[in-house]
Each structure stands twice: as C-alpha cells, then as structure tokens.
Length: 166
Image (cartoon, rainbow, N blue to C red):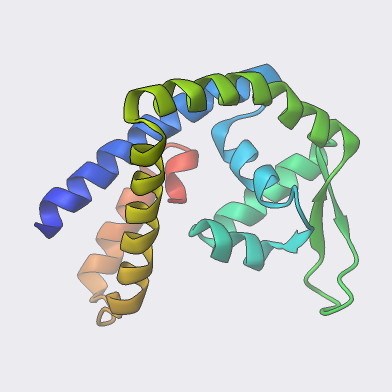
C-alpha cells in the first residue's frame, strides 16, 4: 500500500510540476520561482521558514530566493527576530508577476472543481493534508549509510531544477 501511495504521489507531483510550469509562464516565472514567491505573499519569511512550509531544502530555497532578488521580483528585509536570517518579501514587480498567473490558476481550479465536484475536491485536500501530517509523525528514519548518501547525491545531481525540492 505504501509503494502504491508513493507512486501515485510521485506521478501527481510530476503532473503538478508540469501544470505549474505552464501556469507560471504568463508571469515570467518558473514553477520553482512561483513556489518560493508564493510562500511569502502573505508575510515575509526567512529562507529556512519557507523551506519548512514548502517541504523543500533550505539550499534550494536560498538559490531561488537569490534569483528572485537578482531579477527584482523579491527583496531581503531585516528580520527583527534574527539578525542574520533576513526576511524574503515580494516587490511590486513580484506581486505583478503573480497576478498574471491568477487567471490561469483560477481556470484550472474551476476545471478541477468541475471534474471532482466541490465536496470531492475538499475531500482530496483533506486526505492529502492528513497523509502529509501522518508521514511527518512517523517518518523518523535511521541515518543513511554512506552508500545511500552517495546514491542520494547522484539523484540530486540528475534532477531538473524544481524537482530538487518536493
């Protein structure tokens, strides 16, 4: 059952990544940049906080955050809670880019809602959130061996940009 669940989630992740790349294009973003920028729309967050919320590595977020800042879509701001961990926040240009994604996002949400039905869509969200919480609760795995660390590094070296996260 776990393998079937994992394969289904991996497929769903790939589908969402593909759709997200298409949705992000009108805003001049990639899926990875949209993901990180989207994490700070409500409130500025430090890179580590974005990584925690999104379930991706801090290093991946740092790389994308630096790219967003370099292209003027986000900026670093002082963090009153931590002198060294600056907060990332969108600029006006970043907000404008995300607004351009809105119509495509709304259209996809409406089509998915039509396919699943409002109740089915809400249940899908609940099940995915429940699975994520359950995995967090039980996922204390033993430390990897040297061989598995090497394999994991090889896997990371061959992933596309966005897949290095989720």
